[in-house]
Image (cartoon, one colour):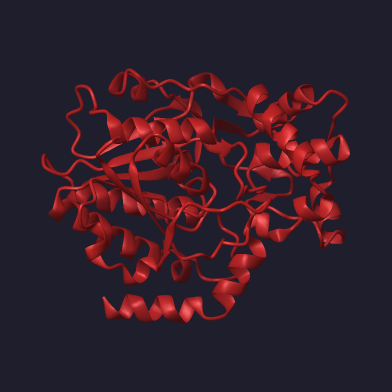
Length: 362
């Protein structure tokens, strides 16, 4: 058995649901921590690993007793907040994340935090960890903000690991259908048709959830090679897996023969169809966010790390799982798998006031 004890915050999210049982299977001791906001966002009933239902805004530092590594997944993914002020959403996340990171520094605990390649925003060239950041959304701006705070408190004794993840895809019990490949796979399975709500010309790097888990496990188990950075920043993915959105649709189509790829008149159709899940970052069919990313550094820093999954393998697995579960349109279109109604309910009711009170207290 591995002697390390791991605290996973956000253990009931898209990644955490898959990560925590994998860590247990590897023999690690694991403490899962989650608010339970997404407890019911499951495709099928399955017992979760043991988890402490608690709020990161009221984190008890005693939970870090005997902890060797913190994997800090607790956050709010994407930007499903309508007209709410992003500061009301993301300021508390930054506050409790800084609080947790400082505790880890005081206690000598390894700190692993997944950021996002979305921090690169817009770029015509292939970019790496040294490239200028250009975040385009409140979500990615929040990632940049916390990255900067982590770098400020890092030194020779505290080297947090910042993992800038490519756009995720792949099966998880608490799947997110707002992620592009997961959405395309669902469309293909149910309708044999993928409908793009943009012109499909924006670039994205993609990475399978299992390869993200593999990267996290590598950071837990191994020491980085020849890294002099106080804060270790690594892109997570494979350089070969940079694609235009339209090409991602074609890759899914080839994994499920007979699937057609279509474009819609974005503005007209979405205005008329109130039930369609929209992306507020696309205007008149154009997504200005476009970036291609190099993933060579992680292979140098962790020579044992490489990605195992490609799009065909990952999409095929999802299609097989959907078939096993007899996925229905009502499931695929359920806003909880886009985190929309869940977040709307939380933030329109008690959560905003609680967050603002917490900010004032600290």
